[in-house]
Length: 110
Image (cartoon, rainbow, N blue to C red; front, side, top):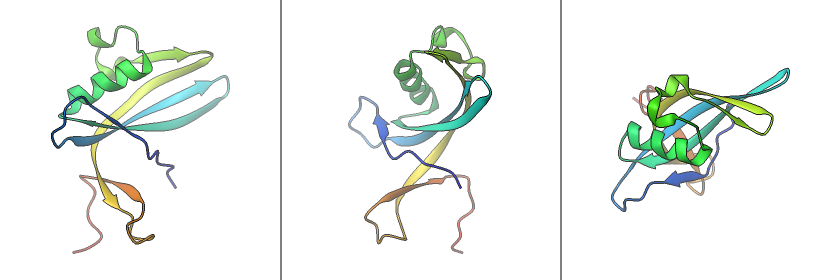
């Protein structure tokens, strides 16, 4: 089961934005873990710019995202994926919460 972060970082614009999940992996000695940030932006490039700024990725503007690696203390992080997602009301709690659904994931309802 995936652990989803509920905090969504927003871009500067007030118009309707798309939500992107940016996945990355952390490494510390023998351990590693997967993480996701959810960012609202106009497009993938804008979402990646917000992500790079938030994580202070050095030389991000001169590299392709699949080459991004950065350190935070003793933790090494590597970029994995950026993909569009849709935020929907949680069906289990009568819409009181929100969950993410991948836009290219087939719907359970037909």
